[in-house]
Amino acid sequence: MNVIETKNVCVSYDKKLTIHDLSIQIPKGQITTLIGPNGCGKSTLIRTIAHLLKPSDGAVFLDSQNIDKKKISDIAKEMAVLPQTNNLANDLTVQELVTFGRIPYRKRFSTLSKEDHEKIDWALEKASLKDLRNRRISTLSGGQRQRAWIAMAIAQDTDTIILDEPTTYLDLTHQLDVMLLIKELNEKEHRTIIMALHDLNHAARFSDQLIAIKKGVLQVSGPVQEVITKNNLRNIFDIDAKIIEDKSKPMILTYNRWRGGQV
Amino acid sequence: MNQRLKFSINIIVGLGLLILLTMLSIRFGANQNNNSTVFNAIFNYQAGDIDQRIIRDIRIPRVLGAILIGAALAGSGALMQSVTKNPMADSGILGINSGAALMLTLSFVFFPHLSTQGTTVFSVFGAAFTSILVFMISSLKKSQMSPTILVLSGMAISAFFTAISEGLALVMHLKQDLAFWHFGGVSAVSWSQLKNLGPWILVGLVVLIFLAPNLNLLHLSDDSIKSLGKNINLIRILALICVVILSGISVSLVGAVAFVGLIIPHIAKFLIGTDYRQIIPLTLILGADLTVCADLIARTINPPNETPFGLIISLIGVPFFIYLARKDGNS
Image 1 (spheres, rainbow over the protein chains, first blue to last red):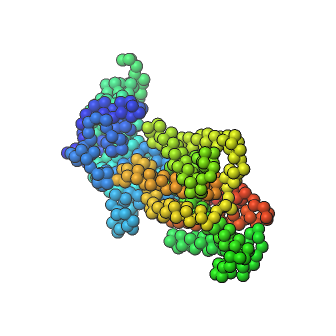
Image 2: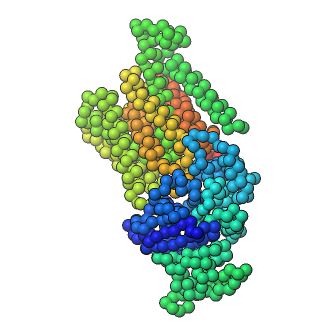
Image 3: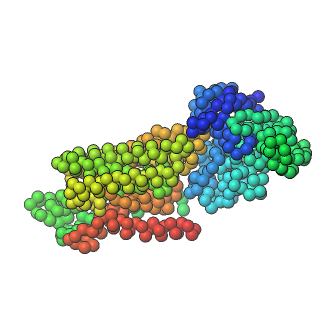
């Protein structure tokens, strides 16, 4: 079953058409990752799926319903979104930030319910932030900060979580922390994950499905093994790579620049 | 410390300080008098007594004006900072004061005999026009409104409008009439102004307090807010109207008073944290504290001359602000 589908979606941004006639299906309960070179429209597509941008043509369907016809307060109970740059909210404590995740369930001016408190604790626990709950965001390391934002999305307790390049600006260890946390959410909590990633090896290792885009046009989509092939890497990323297999997932070993059919 | 207790203590101290400063402001000034004159002026008023009249007709409206203006300036500063997600925002930096001042100058040029209400309408219109202009310029680019562009366009507009008003004032020989505006001060606030404009400020302040819980959302980016299922456009528009009314009226009453809107919200945040339901009430009280205190100093430091009010505010506010910034940075 598909949680999200796009049908013939076109998106223009600053009067330029950045997504062309794109139709994809994103299966429920899996990790689906968008890949593609810089400026290919990954972020635009993820923002469109997240209902943050309006397609100029075509439609996005969430659980087979046109997302445009849904109330944004209802959408917020079905999918949580972690936008790309989060340099705001630095004065808040971790706990205050995570509490925002409960907004879709709260009535105006009401205090936090028992369930709200439980979900917040659960989110902090999942993101290993229990000991840091009273620290201000500005005092955290990049990795901890990103985990705090993910914890907010966890507290929103939605079936689907959308993340736009969650590992950007993090060092290797913290990138891995974030990826493992995402994997855990998928496997243990059965959340559907949709994200955009730069790192092809991370994408290949942690995803079930990949969707590759170039210049706003869908190139190939499907299970990881089918997408990460020598030919696709040449065509989409202009790289010539050696691909090996590790733990039954493809791994890209060496890169060479691929120009006009030659190494 | 328990957050609620901390909030209560701050509010009580702020209010206590305000009451003390208000009493001192009524008691002391260029004209010497004693406690019994003050008591009589309030409870046993005799219009024939010049000392009593000074207290009743000059000092009391003046201090009430200072309270309202302080709350209005600080409150609209807090609102601007939150809505534009820009800690540097206040009505001065975003050019709104200069727009109000330009319209005020124009009203002096073309309608020299206008009443206070008349000039206030001009001033509020100028504030509205300028804020729309600044927001339009900074959202010309379709991407999310960047705080830097907002401040830059505010400063550009401010410089442009100030140049026009200054030029007009020079050419039309209005320097004398507008001098008070440049220094800013509550000395000219009268009972009739308070009766006409006070209610508007109060309405603005009440709307501000009702907006406060929604401002907490603005700690997040617009994308995050939308994905939490909230629409903040209505809040933005209400906030903007509120800022326009508050700063437009403030400018027409007391002129360009810098810093109150910039520093008071930061001080309030430093004292009680990040929850706008608590920040806003404390901001209003602290703003009133600062203006009443500044006005008291302005007229007692070198009597019978008045020291410019805006100068005193900068002298009190800026060192305190730097102290807070340093202390916060160290911890």
